[in-house]
Image (tube, rainbow, N blue to C red):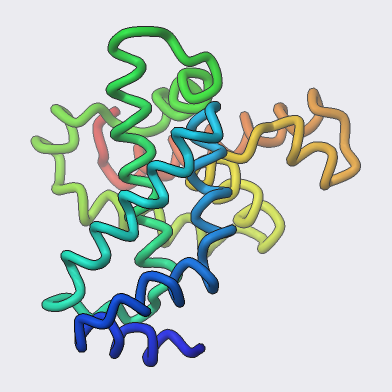
Length: 185
């Protein structure tokens, strides 16, 4: 079923919209949540929460790209669940992932004084588009989807240490670009 047909089901308040969303995007959503959370059950709950949020948001929203929109919702739900769990117990996987980026992304307090989050996102998007496709895909898969470094290294047929160095250089390039644009880190 096409995205426009699924969205039409949401607008008609037809519960088949959830089933069609799950059929088309269930594995994609579960992969996003699973990369952020370690427990399969938590990932499944996040996906179900995302479907619930989609039901409540459509209408009035009409996402242009349902898959990307839903991926963002799942990611936000999973990060919220991770932060809640992290307040009680340390989660090494996401802590490592976020700590890798903290040197090249400004803190929320600095973002508010330097420029708003939307402009920061636009600057990062411009930087990503300037990268070779392979680097762009690696960066997004690692830092947006949370794919573990070892899994990326295996896919790239590269030793994890070499890929870690490559990711370090990409983060450094992002940091340099943001500083060049006058964003205070």
